[in-house]
Length: 420
Image (cartoon, rainbow, N blue to C red; front, side):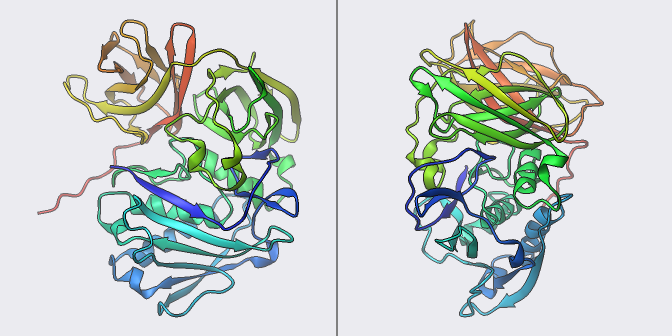
């Protein structure tokens, strides 16, 4: 089962500039503005409500690890300071509080949310409250991943449509990976960099054009030669996008709609003003060789036509398994493993719909099988496969669609504990 992670704000929003990654963006005095902390706010002090520590013996340590995960990203100027465990009646007026949600989330399917305020003149954040539901520590979901997700919200990040991202709006089973993905790291480094971000990476700018002109809230992805979704951006109301702090390398760019698993309604602020218009996923014409410190413009992705194909879920089993559980959480695989992958969704056609793992470490070793709106195939993962996330490309006739970040490769199987 998957549970929502959320962020809330009282701001009223209208239009949108093009920002790298997906940032909390609100209309401030007529200007669309991405909210963030001022440099003078650091080190940010956070307090932990004593009621939260009663939910789980390791709750305080898990919260500390969640803040540390973001502050230890190389070349990021984030610093946090623990204010310790405090009584529930003691607010943290100018920092971050981790507190109990009580009945706030009851019946809404959410296990945590972040509420925050910001200066309506400058867009600088003033305080934030992470509110957790007691079910967070039930053992049914990955509490560490959920906490890291909420810390990302307190820093100004909105939800991501990359399945392997910590900022993905759903949290999966307990053993789902909790590591920050490269898209998370680049997103936060773009906002809070110690140095001029244009000197450390490249900027890729362009536009996504559909049947009726520029496409609003299309996700643009830069995928490297290992099939890893390195950086993402959403397009503004005229279809413009900007990918910033992209490391040197060779990339393919593609644009995909927010038509599930993540929809426009999962985002906050101005992004919700977008009218979701499905379009066929489309690649930019050619690969782009990127050098640090340079800007690459005029990258136009043209997409048009009707849409039927829409992959939404993935599952992994042993090659000889006869059943599989499909969900919208990334699948964990390991070097040297042989695994049967199954993709489910809409518009799948028996004998026609196929899929490819862009990561060259994956080699398909079986024919495709179709059943019940899904397609399966068995893959061998190379023993030297790098630890990374990967994109899956689904095709059906001339139509293409993506599951971005649907796979996570780990260097070694994770140890599992047995309870008696």
